Length: 253
Image (cartoon, rainbow, N blue to C red; front, top):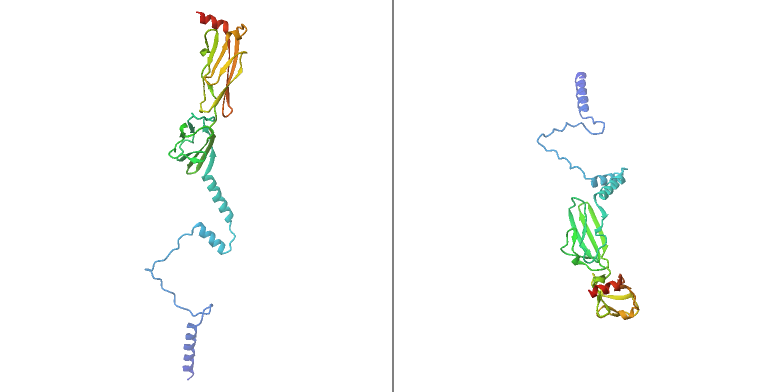
């Protein structure tokens, strides 16, 4: 009887050890078998924005400011705006304009007059037929990493004298000079006799200056100063002296 009781105790103790829980309070389980045919899924690498989101979500103190500053610096270096010069520096109504861009530049070019785009002008040259006196000309060239800009104003030009003292005619003891003036901008202009001997006569309709020898008091030399002024206030002056003695001797031959 004692022998049978001893065997029963041994069997009970073996059964208790096999069902004893582990340290975590769970019963020992058989190890899982690995299925070699099963594919293992891998996560895609996170983008920089996703990394920053994960950092903020987990409360980690990372140098995100340095990342932002580096991105801003790269953007600044990638695109720059520069001022250039429209040539010639003094532009007039009959002057063709141009700009000099860096060698190898490739991009879009635009010309504007008084802030209005000139369609069809997409090169570094602009013909003078597109503007007039006083117009503001703007140029812009935009490339991949740079933009070039330039501005200029079309200047006014004073009237020009076409005639000179070689055009003076002496006829029957009378001095006659037909004044010829041209304004490059087609502005209206006025002619003023600034200096001349007493007794002269000027006809503004024909722009003729005349003087009788009888009014000269037998002077051998006479001097003139003539001014032509346009509507913008710019003017040109012509001044010369005539030796009547030499002029007479030439006419008598």
